[in-house]
Length: 324
Image 1 (cartoon, rainbow, N blue to C red):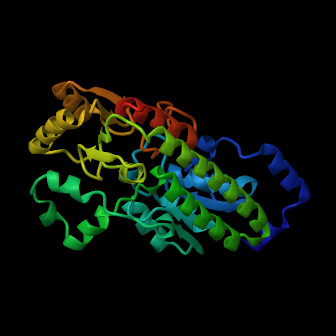
Image 2: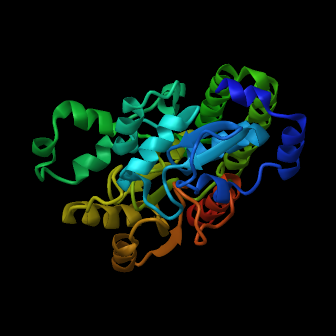
């Protein structure tokens, strides 16, 4: 934080407090906003990171997001204006491996505090099975083996409340170090967020404990951590990349599995095409519903923030899995 920011008047602090946290969607979606304000300026890569920064930063943080609401984060390209914004910020909060353009931009900036959420918890490989189902269609030839392995690491850690809480704790400590004048508030805000995430974890544990089936179908493999946490099995039409097309063999396999495992529903999401999911559902005589990977909040989202959408996801899973 610049020295001048330590000289914020008591009046300014009072005004900021009066404003409260504000609407996350308005603040985090303002990717055109410039940094270098009188607050702790944080540039977040996309919604789950912006939400953490808002919740932990509270009144002291000015959070902007590089990904607009409704924009598919995997496809993000960084503009010259956004690169300048990164240079002016006090901190960058991102998730390495999810958005290559962000990874590159952050690595090239001189920003002092770079917080990689992927380094604050353990990433696992949930994509290998789905990639194998897609067949030998030149994937290995197009990308080197090392790069393929890196991309097989599932970045969707925010969909597991326990892992998201681990990341929150790491972000809180990074904020405390980068802006020590407000360390006490960051610590308090982090504790409150972690407590709420622990409560969400309890809701999922209890809500999914007794179900008729443990298998659910999704558009792309975003829910591996969630499935693993609550003893479920995710079967993705596509792999970790939401834009990849499944092979005919994969579609046939899913149709057979739906009958064998009592699958009732094919889940799709709001930010990518639902065509493949709906086609599979029609052919296999299954229902469709939304399971939101929470990569962004839009007017189509079933809630206004992370917690509301996750609760909606829980209800959708309970209905699809036949929760008792």
